[in-house]
Image (cartoon, rainbow, N blue to C red; front, side):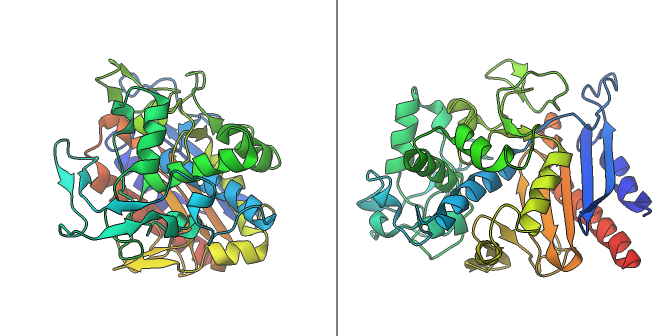
Length: 371
């Protein structure tokens, strides 16, 4: 298959939006495209990115947390409609609804709903709410500014809410951090051990795991002023970093080959039962053009959405560092796209959005022409 148009879209953004990229495309169970672009040191264009280069998955890590949870759901050890407080008793009581700090604009706040005296009954929040991102939790909190891991845990379990449960869909790292806590409580082991035991080891995804990892052949991310160094082999997300690099919302590194293999295992029900995946890819919550499944973002009519070029049955996830995984069952297609767009800072999100759509559109055009 001729993916020259897709490659051209990568070259257009290379060394402007991101200095390194990996792509693996699978169709009908076979790898039909596998390539790496750019370099790990854009100032010198060496060393070159290769097939073994590992990238910081950012929020694509959430899919591994969710998959681990769903294996336990299949074993009837937890249920999607089970109140979270049954596993995390501190996550209960009545909570105020307040604004929260804007993660992208220091000093600004996000007010999801107007000021209100209403309070949220946290004991009614279920795992389905956390995974559909309609729990009422804020999108983000600055956990990394607290002093200890225990303080971070208490903040996640006792924070104020941003809106009434079910009233909106607000993508929340806090919700997935809580899922990570619940998994550790349920399994009696650390989240990284659980993900390894239930997901990466059975699928032989040897490159995929939580950091920190040796920085050799890792795509570097952002220069952190508070560390006075560029992050490489340590997670880019400050909150995950503050939890030691292992958290329910971020922290995993790996290659596009292994990420695509994970997507293929989901598509073919090698990892989870067909009925489980069917439930996960049903619309659980909607807000405008945004549609959420259980852990997955679903196809959207929004022409700027990453998954818009795929079929209406498509599902996937993106990551803040410039990563994504999309699965299109109608085309038997899996597309893993990894970049390190935050190498250049956090202000190129619009360019990254435009690139993802252009790249996915080019891929779909090729696949359609071959069917």
